[in-house]
Image (cartoon, rainbow, N blue to C red; front, side, top):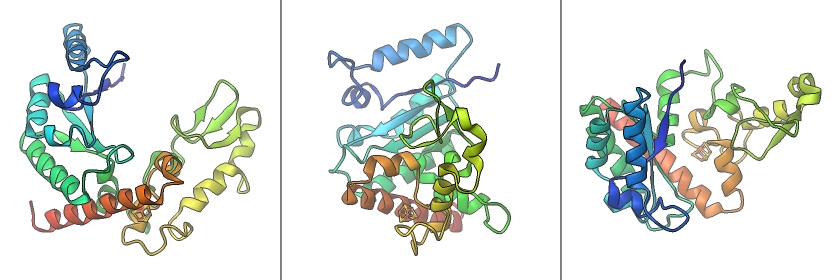
Length: 242
Ligand code: SF4
């Protein structure tokens, strides 16, 4: 059985419990750690965890979370910034934290990633000369969600309906909503992204992120700044051989 188990864990106890609480407002760190131990005891250890960083736990997330990942025994650790609920953290400080933790995680032989890495990864491993590619698998046409009401969506998180299971074949015709959505997201077709320095490797980021920030230009601007600044820094690091 090839099932991977991962969880959210937003730092050590102080960092996690400052944002991830239960319905009664109690911190969830101890519960998450207990479940991680339980899974390990029945030979189904978790494979990794994701750290969400906001204004509230930003200063509490540091190298110690990488040390905890090693202690738990996972190979994968992801970190992303919740810019929707965070207006107090700057792009520069986010990039600084990414580089610091990425470097430390690699020293400890851990995979460390986040959505901020996707344009850089696309730049390093894909070329439009060989194969089309996109920021998210949904926009590469790799995922399709079948819902109980018969609707089809490009992934499990989006609100955009692209077809119906009753007329499944029609979903893939050139005029279909699905084809047109993907067409509209290709480099050169999205007015918002035209001319951006990472257009080919980012091309509008994730569809769900776009939906959730559609009416908030400031938020979209901050997300783009983070994506561009991180990609530049990762390219610099690569060129410097670090
Ligand atoms: S960073 Fe922003 S403007 Fe640039 S390609 Fe990505 S979504 Fe478009």
